[in-house]
Amino acid sequence: MRYGDPERAWTSFWKKGFMHFPDPGMDRLKNIRKEKENQMETVYDFTLPKGYMDNAGELHRKGKMRLATAGDEISATRDPRVLSNPSYLTIVILSKVITQLEGVEMVSATLIEKLFTADLAFLQDMYQRINDIEPPTMQVVCPHCGESFEVPLNFTEEG
Image (cartoon, rainbow, N blue to C red; front, side):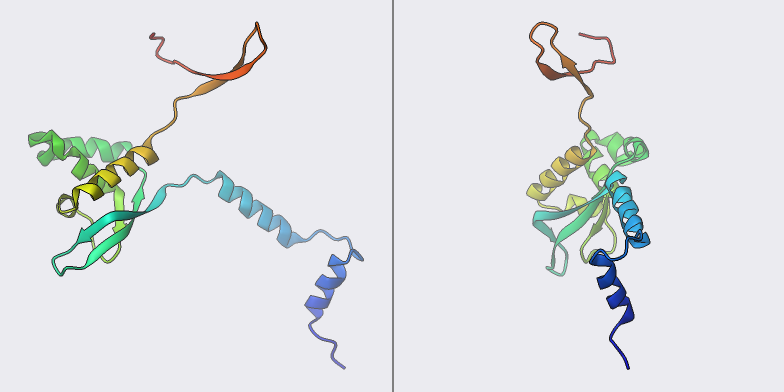
C-alpha cells in the first residue's frame, strides 16, 4: 500500500514540530544569502532614452555597463584620438565600460559616436553615478548638546 510521497510526509511531519532536527538546506540558503549581500554589484543594466539606430534602421536600447577600472581610464588617456582631441575621452571610456548593447555584436568608439546626444548624456551620467564614491564620513557627538551627526573626513589636511 502506497501512502504518497515519503519526502513530503517527512517534511510535513518535521514542520509540525514533531521532530527538531536542523535543516542542512536552510543553513546553505542562509550562507548563499549572506554571500549575495556581501557581493558588490559591478555590472549595471540600462535602457537608453532614445536608442542606437543601426544601419538597417533597427533600434537598440537595452545594455550593460560595468564599473571602470584604473586601467580603463589610463589607457583611454593614452589613446591617439584622445591625445589629438581631449573631448574624445568620454567616447573611448564609454566604449570600454559598455559591455553589451542588445543586438549589437561589439560596442566600439565608433558606435558611441553615433548615439543621439540624449543617450550620450544618459550614459555619461550613469558612468559618473556608478563609479563615484561617497566621501568618507565619521559619526560624531557634540560635546555640548549631545546630538549625533556625520562629518566628512579630510585625509588631505587641507582646509
